[in-house]
Image 1 (spheres, rainbow, N blue to C red):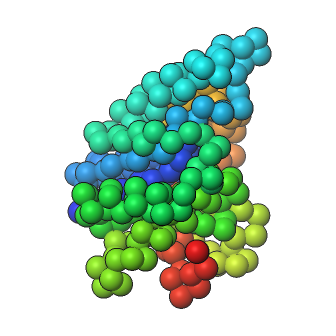
Image 2: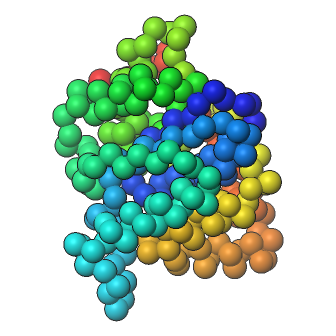
Length: 227
């Protein structure tokens, strides 16, 4: 994995980073690259409150904040930003406000690489709004000065439209940290972790590939449709 000057990760929810990019983050940290993770919300509207309930809507953000901090520590992130927006409302935020938030981070940190969701191919409305804001902010930078923009895509049809991943990071050296980051978000990921670990015991090829490799798409500026 290429050594970067500074990596900026921008996602809307605690645990967005854990499944798809935690190995990449941990590897950058291991390589001595500073990583800033800007998490826009505290996941207040997370689906899992437990049965019987372990949380209420009022207490869940406090739980998820601690989980986010634990996950960041597992990955080695020393600069965690909690941006204070509310879960499931990012899509309703003013476009310019979101763009300026991202622009502020870029101006402060001068990242050589930004990681976020690919607009149009990331399913959840908050994911989509976050990706669009990042694209708008980066688009305002002169082309020759733009940081690389690596996007996570996972909709049903994304490869048919944007092709196979441009970047596949081998994160096999940090799989323990990847699993640790997922386990940190236990309030929302408990059942998924149990399922994944069982498949790992069975040496399921798909699960092993998911654990050891992380996939990213370069944003296709020539097909930019973000408004």
